[in-house]
Length: 230
Length: 404
Image (cartoon, rainbow over the protein chains, first blue to last red):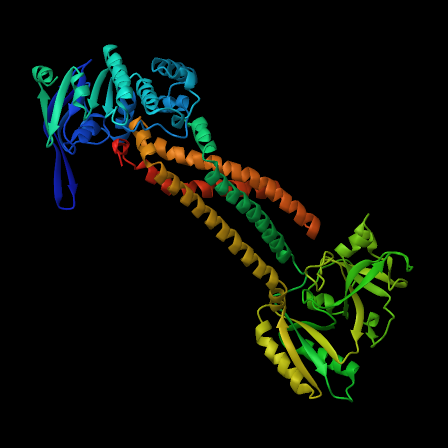
């Protein structure tokens, strides 16, 4: 479903070239739970941005469900993000002026669903993350773990093909992090593909596949090694 | 999908900035529409025709200082000389000049008696050449004959037996049928009768701000005065050439007087409405400045709001908003702020206008001017927010994943 072939990303500023990703070759299959680890500045966020169509790669090929996304216009990329990708951010990125209901509603409106359909999806997703009773609350009235659950509900509301999670537990204490991680595992077991960037090796090991990025190069971490580390 | 509900709910949680801009829009609307209304009112006043030929006419003041001067002979000699000058169409002595700001007025009434209300009227003392010299349009009746013209002596209180009045004055004196004024007797100074022998279409009074500016009467008098005005009409296009000629001719013909204050009717109109023009310019400057300040206010608020919400905009883009949808968000948001401002502004506009109408006896402003204000401010608002909205639309969706 997601395939990167010799994909490179180079940032050009004045006379300095920074190679953020070098010849990435990677396939992500339906139902995978892929963790992405690596030291700070290794290119994890760049990888996530490219995988999530938030920015373009410099060279190579990136196929999403068989479609070469490199040549797509900005508006087509926006549509594709809305239809196929759900995002979970480290800082939750909820809109502070909107209540939980309206926050989950945002991507649904871009999708063009009618009011009834949106209402049904919002209720269903907020129930799924256990926050249906607080849908009129503002994000600031929730704990970090609850806010991340709302962000997950928002990401799932459009029925995306895969979830991209950028350090989803980075801003949470360990108890809340465990809760969010369990929720992600549950979502994955229900068939949603997940790509998760994390610093936390313990969480990374709970994924079905792991890759490591170092100096812009991607390498797959074999399952054996994962067990040894565990 | 316009996200109207989300925009309104988000605005309701950040009311202060939006409300301040809405109030600024309301104030701009109130002042703009009423200022334009006042400008229009003045322009309409300035566009009124005086009823006389203003392009080919001028006047001067003849002041006699010689002690043994025969005023009656001198006046006839002067007028004959001016009228015979090649290029001159006609000339008269006149006691006041339309639009000049200074003149005579009296009350005319249809019945004699001190207890009867008179209609305020500008009085022009002229001879039988007045209709030709002023280029007036006689729409009913006849002109004065030379034998009708009498001498108005200093301190004289008697009035001549005939009068020519404007149509507006006829309508005021005889509201049921202005044309019926012809041949009727009207009374001046409470009980002195004058027969209306003619009706002229229009002749404005000397005072442009007077509500009865269209009410004037010609009375057949020549004034025996040591200071009088001569009003001269030339052939088209020859006024400027003949002004110094006539000034010099009069000055040289008799050394017992001086000729001064030569002025054209065009200059008189310009001077008469100078304050109107200046006020209109000030009002236009105020309106333009206020509109510009409001536009800058909208730009400022939008830029502040965008800078504050950069990450939020990136998140919206990540969640699937196209550039156009981001741009539209800010334009719709601005539309709602403008709508609140304009609604308050309409109330303010009508209230201020109500006060102006009652205070200064003006006609109420029309719906079309309010509609113009609404459309103008919506357009100004949308244009002002265009640049910040475009700036917002260019925020990268990758902003959503940045931690700083």
